[in-house]
Length: 337
Image (cartoon, rainbow, N blue to C red):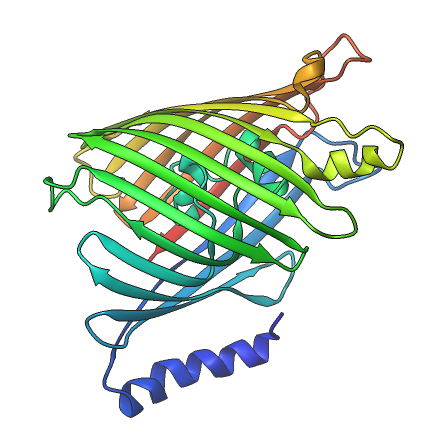
């Protein structure tokens, strides 16, 4: 982690010294957000409400026509420190083949590929968050070959990502994603293999399928994945149980935009999102259901006030009734640049 003073010095050097020393073009982007969450929690154990703020500052440095570097800094009020989230270098080999190296996203799932600042809902789905905690998502030191579909090149109606990665938890793996695009529709498939080489060598597989629609004024998506929980399997292997633990997740979302014609709030974007998560398919009595409704109010295309009412129901094989613990309501003001 970098201290606030260190990051301020880095940003000042980037803003004032780099353009004068180097001839490359530097583009800055990011976002700032501040909000308030209310949780369904036992206040004797955890806070049931919190105010927060966070930000992202990204610099894209064009070395030449074929090489571009990226630095991505994040900060939140929870840590009160600045983190270097990503360093990467991109090489444009040709129109249909690019390479990227650095601490980058593992290509697995729709939610994981989308920047957090561009998600319609404030937080990723509960199912996707759980998959990321098991290693099926997030960032890692990776080398990736890819091509991302662009409507400017309709003659190439596909996207692909092929990645090899390793992180500091002694885990290596490969990840791949392919999607086909037809007008506003896209159809995707994912695969990931993770090898844990810390103390005990163990493999975990993950597959996923998704369908999405991105229209001018609306969007919809359905995503399902089946992955293996290596962490839980390692714990159980100590007791002699070495069976694979299969995890199933499902997520769907829908939203549309309504132009208001007003001066202050330009448009409103109602949305819904739902997910279900089975932490162990051999015992489906235990599962978690998420039902989210919300709306984004746009003062500008890059300035929006966001509301999410996120109901989370969970149970296990030992209880018959659902609990609403960790359900939450969130309001956030976000500014992108």
